[in-house]
Image 1 (cartoon, helix red, strand yellow):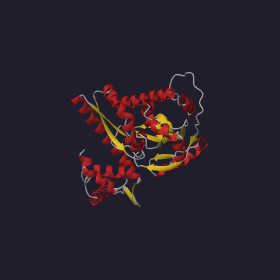
Image 2 (tube, helix red, strand yellow):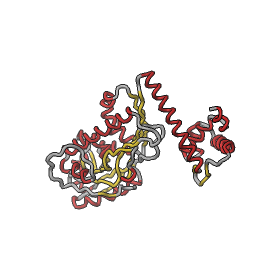
Image 3 (cartoon, rainbow, N blue to C red):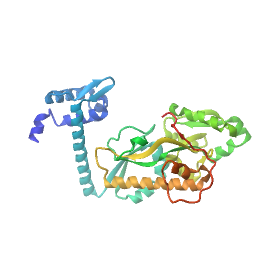
Image 4 (cartoon, helix red, strand yellow):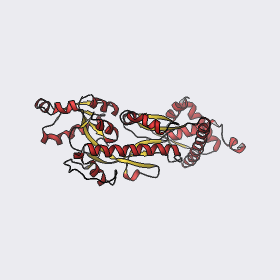
Length: 343
């Protein structure tokens, strides 16, 4: 350790370097560290001078690690993660309580997890759950979390991820809206389509596929938080595109209904992911498995409640078996692999 101290301008330089390398931007690193951007730049320049090598290349819009920078970042990340794990273990030994942090969408938390939060707490009475919430499209790196929900391509699923289900979508609305839309006046007026930002405008166009049944999109409600999209559908404001991993609870409660007997299965996969550079703690693995079990149970129940959707059959075509085989009702539902709107 005495030699290490001589090789660095200060111990704080390690924290500044790690934040800058992870954020890819001095300004974001400064915001995270509650210092000024020039202070970050000066510290890293001192560190480079001290080591006698360049650690970053300044590029348009941010910074990139050099080969030497990548070597240092990899080792510092491993060290910091080890220290963090040790501190968590000490805290758990002292209090008998462990913490698990999830990076998930506000929609998933509000509409899927919250209705069963009491069951989750009963399953893990000695676990503090913490949430890093994303209001828009879920994505980005996992920073200071144990588990995250992300949509991946098939070739992106690796050792640090597990499949929840193929991305499965269907048009949903509440019963009052569904009944009103079926009347002559409702068909003449057309549907209000609820979407999650301009990237989902393709769903507005999908209503042309319902033309044979006399349906058409008359207007659109546009929100940048999918939790609000689902809430608007629950309140009867229109038809929304329902991600099954979010709306399954409301389908089972009857608060939402399939607006049409149609499923969309995309080429993306809903996965639970954990950081590559540190092992998944046993308690986090248990929470992961609980979410998987609950999700699969929901899918089986939705399949039983809405057999004409053909959900089990459609997911089986993607390679996902959701439980013991049973007699299937013939389905008139249409399901085909597509690229998700706005992807």
